[in-house]
Length: 456
Ligand SMILES: Cc1cc2nc3c(=O)[nH]c(=O)nc-3n(C[C@H](O)[C@H](O)[C@H](O)COP(=O)(O)OP(=O)(O)OC[C@H]3O[C@@H](n4cnc5c(N)ncnc54)[C@H](O)[C@@H]3O)c2cc1C
Image (cartoon, rainbow, N blue to C red; front, side):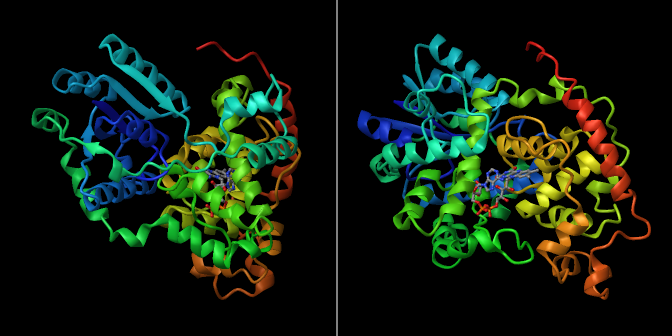
């Protein structure tokens, strides 16, 4: 019997592990483990946790709909695998790989446990569009690309030649088995999480990412290059929360996009940014450690609270933070503007904003979020230059001239004329010009403070 553990792959089609299980022609025990660490501090009540649970609930319905068995457990994966192996004839564990520091540590432990119990442990690559090892071989490079544009050119040609189409085995082909009742009882999910799962259950069709993709391809993709930064309208796909939970695979998205190659170059570039960050997470040993590589001690946190609550007195910043706090969503351009404002104008270390987005973004992804924060604070590969400090007022005037976004999220300003609505309020907590000049000095210093990364 094969034990399959669902993680950031909350779907039932185009799964490398399903192909492997199907070829093995064996029965499989399918579990999804809610890990205490990932749900700590009541994260299941925050937008990011809710999005994950909503997809868990959707996956559960999909299994039921197809007459198959999925068991949702709560506990330490390593402990659960040990217990399962005690009562089920499992000889192999299969998972899709995850590359964050927490996940790598967890999986090392899981592998050791599996091997100690005489079980094989297989990880399948799933999250990137290009297979990293194959890509490195094909590009003939021993060093990673550090700049996006050459990476993109190479990545594009690689996919043109070597794209691996979606995997074909579906859940219907698998023989899923029931779990021992004692295990189900010992690792039962907490009452409050069960309540959330029930409350979040939606009719399957409402959340189907394939429909979202199809709508976007039919109506929006051809206008994407123009509309993506007009954040008062919805010009982007809104697929991220599905991609990051694995509710839709990036191969399926690419396959659909390239059916008509001329339509989506600009959108393809964004998918390449996604791969570029996932690539860095695996190849840049400092990616998850830049806060220890540079000396950030000249920065401070006294304005963090005002930023997070949308009380800075800079209208577009406050509007964006209000949208985030209320809905779990913020368009990409506003993520860049608010992140740069926090790290540069307010001089706050990027990890504070990163942590805040971790809770609040419904499409939160550890790697992409870090990538966005590194970019905004001029750290890491191909980041914004240290002297780049976006001016939130001119950004707002350029991308939303009538201020309709601000009017929606800050109704108290809705009566202001177009010229006035973007401007700092009287009680603004910072002077944009002065803080910009200071930030340039500070970040110049920070970048020159690079030291060797501390060993783990
Ligand atoms: C400070 C900051 C934090 C961010 N945190 C996250 C995060 O936690 N999770 C997340 O998914 N994205 C994050 N992003 C990237 C980007 O903002 C979102 O991916 C995008 O807004 C999602 O909207 P969409 O699905 O409509 O994207 P579209 O514009 O339709 O793009 C399609 C897909 O391409 C990828 N993509 C688009 N823009 C980027 C980008 N700049 N970097 C990497 N991949 C991109 C995403 O997977 C996205 O779903 C962050 C960006 C910044 C500046």
